[in-house]
Amino acid sequence: MEENKMMVSSPFGLRLVHLDLKGAPPKVSYLAEIFPLFRTLGANGLLIEYEDMFPYEGELKPLRAEHAYSASEIKEILNLAKLHKLEVIPLVQTFGHMEFVLKHQEFSHLREVEMFPNALNPHKEESLMLVSAMIDQVVALHDGLRWFHIGSDEVYYLGEGEESKQWLQKEENSTEKLCLSHMKAVASCMVSSHPVVKPIVWDDMLRGVSEETLAVLLVEKYRKCGFPKLWFASAFKGATGANQSLTLIGHHLKNHLQWLKVANSTPADMLQGIALTGWQRYDHFSVLCELLPVGIPSLAVCLQALQNGGYSEKVKENVEKQLGLSSLEIDTFMSESSGTFPGSDVFTLVTQVCFYLKPSVDELLERNRYVTGWFSPYHRKRKIVHPIMMHHFQPDALSLLDKWNAVMQELQAALKRVFYMCTLEEWMEENVHPSLHKLQEVVDDLDKAIQAQS
Image 1 (spheres, one colour):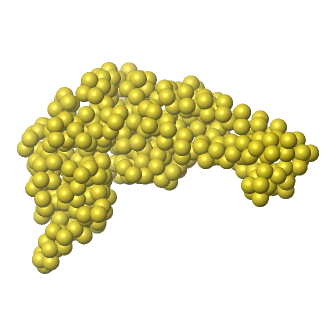
Image 2 (tube, helix red, strand yellow):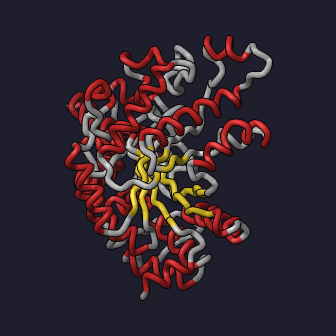
């Protein structure tokens, strides 16, 4: 009964949580913990962006990341989704964001611009064969698919390849047409191979296209394929900075409240659902942004707002109860964060590092007058230290180092439960090691200086 009430109150029939696997892909054991929470919070689907985590076979095998899921793990993920009534929609990029394919030598000849691995050359027949093969392999592992997302956002440098430049010399041709013709070719290919599966695309490349161009090339074709429906895409994390580590919930909540307004003025029969995106990298080569466990409170607030038609004290209390949070902060980062949700230890420790690690090390090295006055880079290089002054800051440096080494051990253990080793290493190298190394170096230099004095 509760579930039916839940369905009626949201204008969005499908509420998809986007899992962006091109960075920090979670272990299947963590997904098993988090899927029931997604469902409880109001999600009923998943948009899974596989990227290099899919177990591609044959000629496509080079696309696999070192820790790519196995075919049996994909089946396990899909079974877990089914168990918790989460409909799965796979997402495979087929035009832009193709770095994970085009960075490999075997496929580099299919780049739009020879130097850049981001966009596919739409003129080559082999390009279409490549994306069709990728789609076919993904569809083969998914039973009962209703939708398949073919990406197509941010096709940077389109029209700048040699073949495109020649094609664009004809007066009737344009980059708009070029973009649409490739999207149409991929969609048509998909529909002919998998007639019951409907293609979905991101719309950012279509927004500037004139109605005439769009109507001539696509609308009728898509209408026949059952494409008069609209999906909205919001963001619960991963959209406020390429190296952002903490999620500002209020920013993402506002985004969802705006989408609710739009939904209420959209004909109900046109609205298919909403995907709550949670980008893990801005592209294949960029750094990690907020880790999934760090974004869970934001996801919870956004899903609950969609379910309840807005944000209220009731929503706040629901989220606090579901996540085991003592106090939910919306308009500031949650500095004193703890919870009982899966991965809450990652959330707490990442917050601790982001708030206190760099400031505490900077405080000692740049604002402690004994360090700046009596153990400057000049002193450190020459191993000079005043024996009296040393006692003023050595204990502080050692206790700070001990404290952060202990936090680092805890954080590594927490990350290891959720992620693979490569994610752990990347996050630590980006966010922990720079400050910790500075602290370790000053302690080591102090030891050397003391030894030189004796």
